[in-house]
Length: 118
Image (cartoon, rainbow, N blue to C red; front, side):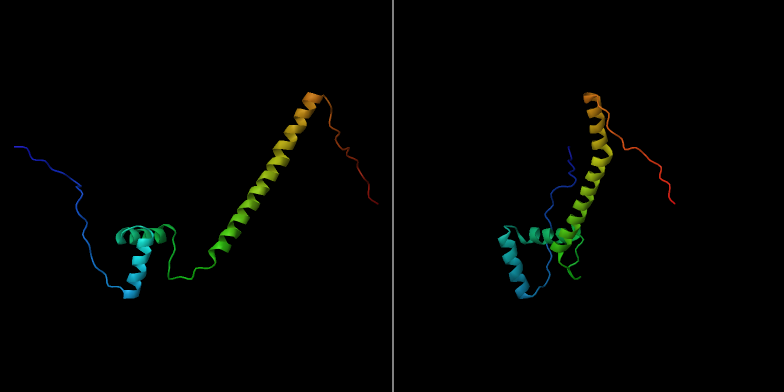
């Protein structure tokens, strides 16, 4: 006699009911149909979106487009500063050394002159 034990079989999910206002149900149905998803998938997607993006729908939500634009501009300014620093500290000195090597010319260094103040 052989007994097969199956763990984690696809058990049918149980359903539960929640009461909503009729207007809310109609809006939700339209939203689910517009996104070509059943009601469970739609509600799970909505809840996942809020949880993953740490958005609380009951707190005021300021103009996110402007906030995002400001954040991107700040990051672009940071990238620009990094590139400028790389250019002055790495690229220009390296180019100067390569020019000296291939052209056998000395780059004129400014002479340091001691000035006496009266």
